[in-house]
Image 1 (cartoon, rainbow, N blue to C red):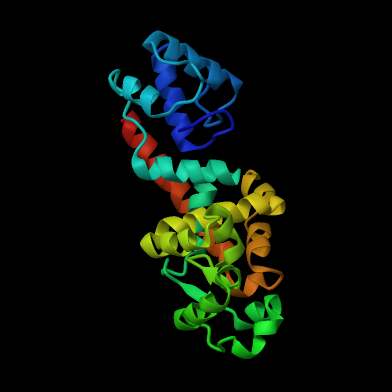
Image 2: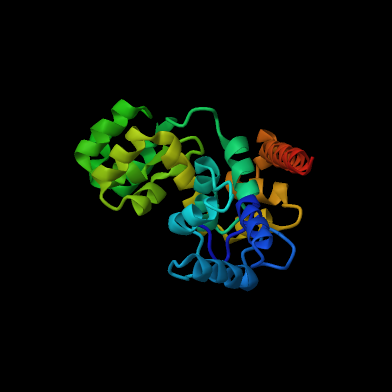
Length: 249
């Protein structure tokens, strides 16, 4: 689903299709603004589907019948997460590549945080940082154990996991079932809370150092995250530029 406010390569592909069909006369700039919304509604009217200006599965299926290549599943998922985060898909994807430690099942329980939240249980709080310690803490206070832990490839605090899955049992089950998906959802949720990070990500070009500082704190430079984000972003730009040339050729 792409709609007003969406941006990126997926939007650009949709605009290019609308141009070929004669519904859109402007440059395919990857910004889903009012003109793209109107063009989408015109296409939907012509196709005989509900004209809400949002290019979802039904609109996509009618467009495919006219030669549109469609939105591949991976791009569509990344687009949805970036839209939810309020940033461009290319920088969200670059952040996900650069910030990943390679293990979406990564998990750390912080006993000090748990004891701070539940001081009456301090003597019973397990001292380790493993999943086993987390399981012991869950038996004492399920939600506080989740909140006192860091989840997934990007080490996002458990507060965000509980926002995504308000029932705490569902939160742990969802992470256990598909940690890669939940890791990306957590990263998207983190961006919604960090206005400065969104601004840095949406600059042209993105302010990589400012973004890394928001994510890692003032000692961000030691980890080199800003260099990794920039390298991943540039690789994506080059890759898409190559694909565009191939399509023209």
